[in-house]
Length: 432
Ligand SMILES: NC(=O)c1ccc[n+]([C@@H]2O[C@H](COP(=O)([O-])OP(=O)(O)OC[C@H]3O[C@@H](n4cnc5c(N)ncnc54)[C@H](OP(=O)(O)O)[C@@H]3O)[C@@H](O)[C@H]2O)c1
Image (cartoon, rainbow, N blue to C red; front, side, top):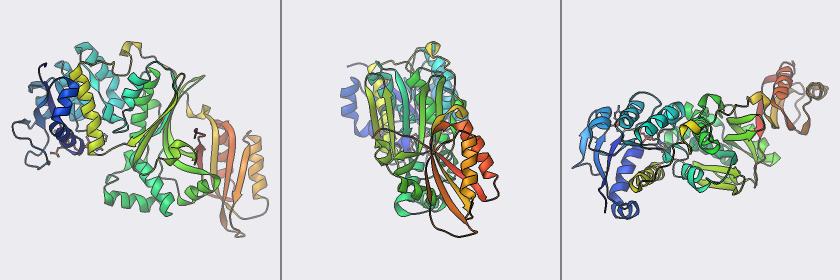
């Protein structure tokens, strides 16, 4: 058998401690699969006195993680601290500069600095592995870089944030408003104290930018991701969507179009029969449409100690086996700069809910504005009558240009009978 592969782990929280546990509990299986022993030689976290439920004796403790990345007796540095800047970035750069492989679960770091890190890894002849950074336990990076390597990917779409999916599921199942579920999710540990990265779509956008780069062999471009979250979705919209045959999901979608690549994260109405519509609570899903393998749907837990650490350890096994895959599927010099399609050029169907004063002639005024901007209505739904009071008016639109939708609904929102902002949600007709 070859020499053991020596590992230094920075960060011993949910994922870090989970990684230590798998390496210790599964040692025999991992050794057999990797063809060599995997040995943790060093660890670093902030508080050495904390009980992390794993055995850390005989492992060197570093109070400074960057010093560990430079000086530890290790072939691989595993970064499990988090954050796009600061210590996490410093650890990865230091490790790559010393020609040590890097494994990370840090999507924020990769979304912002992935290309720089990939270039450093190429220069040093080592790898950067990050299966856990996207969709936790789902092996989507391996699927794209290896299993589907024969294909051109045309479109990739998914539920990439478990917290948002959990909130949307409970709103629908329990008829609760967004704020009520968010508060409960925070109390139960499903949402962070500061939930903005999850519910404003930023976390999903980090993951989508990584997926788009691997799927299309394109330069990673986080700034190009159009990002919206779920704060503005009300229970009323969830219920109307249900009545129309849809569920509301926060999706990340990257697609090739004639004009370039569209990258967007926003709430979507998806038909109830679509596979993704039935992925509920904190589960993630990634659907890949490609030219030979057709459509492949991956579903699984997107977070948590076990699933995420499982992906981290799979990356470590790959390194132990000597598998070397370019970080984003092709060498960085071959990544293409494909133009980004701005959201105003998006063609799609839409759901719109307005609050309008219940008064004769209102609908005719709205229909005139839609006609003037070439927006064609598919269906209208109005519930309840309350003369002189605001009532919800729900419409779905046939495929149209987003720029026309924007202009039409800016004009409609300015009508004196329209109260508050229209709620506009894009409809995605995903396959069942
Ligand atoms: N949790 C998940 O389910 C999940 C899923 C996918 C990806 N990820 C990613 O995995 C990474 C880790 O997440 P996590 O949930 O495990 O975080 P966590 O539970 O908050 O753990 C973070 C760890 O980093 C340590 N740390 C913080 N600052 C440090 C510093 N300056 N030097 C050394 N250690 C430091 C902390 O030390 P102390 O313990 O001493 O405070 C803690 O052990 C993040 O990039 C996250 O986005 C997490």
